[in-house]
Each structure stands twice: as structure tokens, then as C-alpha cells.
Image (cartoon, rainbow over all chains, first blue to last red; front, side, top):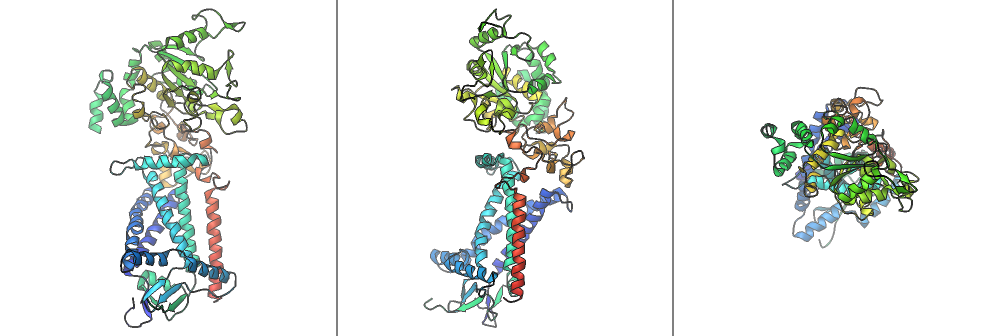
Amino acid sequence: MKANGNPMVVERYSGLDRMIHIIHAAAMLTLIITGLKIYFGWDFMSFHTARALHMFAVPFLLVVNWFLIPVSIVLAAKGGILPRFMHFWDHYIFGPKDAARMAGIIGNFFGKGKYPAFSIYDEASGHYKTKLHPLMKILIVIEGLAIVVIAITGIVLYSLNWSFLGLPIASWILSIGGLFAPAFGLSSLEFLRIIHLLMTYWFVFELVVHVGILEFDPHVWKYYKAIFWSGKEDLTDTHYAEVVKTKNH
Amino acid sequence: MNNLVQTLDSVDFLKMDRRTFMKAVGLIGAATFLGSFKSQIVDALEFAETKLVWLHGAECTGCSESVLNAGNPDIVQALQKLNVNLVFHETICAEQGIWNDGKLVNTADLNSEILLEETYKAGNYILVVEGSIPNGPDGSGRYLVIGNKTFKETLGEAAKNAVAIIAVGACATWGGITNAASDIEKDTDYRGVAFKKADPTKGMLKELGIDKPVINIPGCPAHPDWVLLTLGAVILGKIKVPEDLPAVLDQYNRPKVFFSPDHVVHDNCPRRGYYDRGELDDQIGGPGCLWKLGCKGPYAHADCGIRRWNGSVSLCPQAGGPCIACVEPNFPDASMPLYVETEDKGILLGADIGTVAKVAVGAAAVAAGVHAVRRMKGE
Ligand code: SF4
Ligand code: SF4
């Protein structure tokens, strides 16, 4: 994990992680902008270009989320199923320690206490114990679900009779939508379309939180560099980062 | 597909066997099918001998008017030529029921109520229902009584021996305007023949314990072509009831050939070019797309865009009125408010999702600003 040269400079994001993040960000921005253009009728681009770009970005987002991210998670740890699962759990799932950090962050927001470190590097093992901001761990789970929902509802908006290997997927989705839609006084298609828009708004909200709250801080800008370019973190900069040494690792 | 269409164009529709007919309808779709065979269906109607009983429940008679306004064929032409015996149609028939001391008098020739009773007994007729059927108050059906008989009872009698039942218009299909959400909705309890709103378990036939398939021709009103061509196909036996119905109807019993599950009014709207260019009118009377004025064309499964109305000259959005998806289940509730964009309906505890999103994103942006200032100050 240690990068060449300075022993305090370590690899925070692998090349695969960075590629995933860049493709994910580009696809997501494309989808949000073209989707809202279609919805609001903004006139900076034609409907057909917007729709073409929208459809072009879909496979990128889905491949990143449903294939590359799981691959990267599996590859990030060594050993059998259990160590890999534990790595996933520690890095991506919001746990009690994240809750404690989150409480510290909220306290700090209201003027109480220090901003806790959320990036914990274990010198003994040469690996991060955890590195995501606790809020990010919450957002990631909701985002994963939102992507599933927006993809499913998007199939119907793409084509009302989309089928795959002869299976009438779109009509199944419409039938499932029809179970919930009447509760809102909507038809299934209306319901699915509204959910699609709602998920788009969720992504806009997430973007504001992700960029605005998590990253809008000169001391966090080092992580921009890490995720978009270098992949490295200099642990001598102790803002949000802490180095620990676990025994018996 | 073009070759198939050309081949079928030269086929004599009347000589086509049922299997080929079904295949053709399935393969070539609504517009082509009708373009190719409309005149033949009309000709064929002349040879049919089936009786037709057209009953009116709670409604405005708009669907009858729509059919009376039909062009090519118009209903008068059709009636003059047809061998179909239109036994009873309240709006068209001159004679009506005559009671004396609560009893029907005279003979079937002079008393249409007796004629109806005899027709029901003889069976072998097609029943068309226009208008909804009140079940209230308290399941009695007495909110609609004609000749001291509830319409609920009349429908039961008429449906029992009918060879096919066709519900015409939003009222007969889902309950329509009579069944729209209101303070008295529970009390009046209007039903469609096979559905109540979008619920197939609460149709009036179910309530009466009659298990018969129903073809739904929704619309407010229904398009004359939808009605006449469905009747033509059923009368000719080109669509066999009930065997063929699962293949030709959608889950709401609408003929897929007119109410395609894969297509909506929006697909063929003459204003579609404006939608594609993002020219969305925010005031009625402009040339642009009516989406932001609440047009429900993107949700309405009907062929209005291809078929058009009033002798094929126009359709709602073309004439400047946003589509209100009058063919969809649970119309009009599902389309309410009629001229408000679906996304602006207050479905989240009365708030629309745009407002919720603005508040959430705005709050996040403010929090981000405060956070940024604090962090920059190193607090
Ligand atoms: S007017 Fe309605 S149906 Fe026509 S393009 Fe606009 S949204 Fe679609
Ligand atoms: S355009 Fe819309 S409102 Fe008009 S008849 Fe067709 S489905 Fe009904």
C-alpha cells in the first residue's frame, strides 16, 4: 500500500477506483443534465441529442455500479470470502464507529468539538481500516438502491415493450408499478415516470451533499486530487486522517 | 413488414380464416389493419344477423352521440344496410316501455320493455352497455330506476344470455365521471360493468355473481371506429368470445389493436415536434407542446394520434386541448387535476416532488455553505 519514496504517502485509491469514480461522475452528470433537459424542455440541446446522450450514459453507469464496483471491492482485500467481506463491511457499511464520528461531525457543525478523523490508516497492516466519510457510507447505500430503481423505471420510459431474451420485462415492470400506483391516484406509467424524476432529484441532492458538505473545505481538497488523479494520501497531513498501529494484525 | 402488409392488402378479408385474421391483427397493428380492412368489415356487417341490445345507465349519452357522428361508415348508412337487428337503443328507438298500474301492457311490437324481456329470453344477442351502474344506496341500486326496475337488475337480466358484452365509454368501463372521487362516492357506489375504477374485482357483473367476459371500449367519449370495428369483428366471429379475448385484450379488457400497450397518444401527436425541441407552452392557445399544461398524452394508450377524430381531422392536443387520457383506467380520477402536469400533483403528503426536491436541495446547499465557512475558518 505504501507508495514509493515517502513512507507516509500511501495509496488511497487504486487506479481502478479512480477510473470507476470518474466514469461514474461523468455518466451521472450526463444523465442528470440530459434527463432534466428532457423533463424541463431546456433549449440548449435538441431532444434527440439529449435522449441519445442519456441512453449512451446508461450502460456506463450500470457497468460501473453493477460490475466494476463489486470487482473493485472484491479485489481490494486479500484472502478468502470472510476477509474480503470484512473489508467491504468496514469500508462501506455504516457502523457504530461511523455513528460516533457522525455525532462528532454534527456537533462540530453546531460549534461543538473537533471535526473527527474519518480516514483511519493502520500502519501495522499497511491498509486503511476505513476511509469514507460516515455520511458517504449512508449516501452510498441509498444511491445503490436509487440506481436500481431509476434503471428499472427507466426501462419503461425507454420503451413500453422492452423485452430481454423474449421476456417482456417492460410489461412486468408496468404490472408491478400498477400495484402501487393506484394508492397515489396515478396510472402505472405515471407512477414510474414520477419515481424516475424523484430519483433524479435524489441524485442532485446527493451531489450537493457529496460535493458541498463533504468536500467543500480546503483541507479536503487533497481527496479531490487523490480520487481524480494521484490516488495517494499524505498521512503527514492530519486533517481528517489518523494513523493507528493495530497489534496482532 | 411492408411486404406482409402489401400481401395482406390484396387478401379478401371476408374469406380469411379466423387464425389468419388473428395473426394479421397481431402482426400488422392497429393502423394498418384498419386501413386495410375497415371497408370490408363494414361490408361484412351487412351479412350479420345478430341482434344488438344497447342499454344506457348513468351517463351523458356522449358515446352514443359519438357513434351517431361516425363517418365512413356513418351510423345511418350502417343501420340502413345492416342486417344487424338493433333491438333496443334508448336514444334511437322511438317506442318506450308502457306500464299500466305497474304492469307492462301491449305487445313487443309496441312496448320496447316487453321486446327487451323477450329478447333476453331468446338469447343470442350482443349487449352493449353505455353508462355506469349505481350500486348504492346500500347495494340496492336504487339510484337509477327505470320503470320501477333498478338498472342494476336490468343489467343482470340483459347480461345473463348475451353472447358478448361490450362496455362503451369511461362510465361503463370504470364508472367514469359518475364514479369520480367525491363526498357521495361511497353512497352512490357507481360501478363499471367489469371494473370499478381500476379494480376488476368490483365490477357490477361480479357484484351480480355473473361470470362473463366483457370487452371494454373506454374513452370519454369512445371513438366511433373503436365501437363499430369491435362490434364488426365480434359479429363476424373474427374475434371469438371468449376464446380469443385473452389474446386481443389488454389487462383492462381493452382491444390492444386500438389501445396498444406499447404506444401512447404522445408517440403520434402532431405537436410532438415541439416537445422534441423543448418548446413547451405554458399558456393555452400557443402552437407548442402542451405537456406543461398537464397534457397526459404520454400516458394515454390510444391510437388517437393516428386515427384522429371527427372524420379523421383532429385530436385533442391538435385542437389545443391537453389530452386528459380519457381512455385510461380510473378516468377521470387518474387524470385529475386535468390540466396539471402529473409530476406536479401533490402526491407526497400534498406536496409535489418538484417542491420537495427544491426544499431538500436548497437546505443541503445552505448547510453546505455554513459548513464551508466553518471549515475555512478552521472551526
Ligand atoms: S401535446 Fe401532449 S401528446 Fe402532444 S407532444 Fe405534447 S405532451 Fe405529447
Ligand atoms: S387525445 Fe387523449 S383525451 Fe383526447 S380522446 Fe384521445 S385519449 Fe382521450
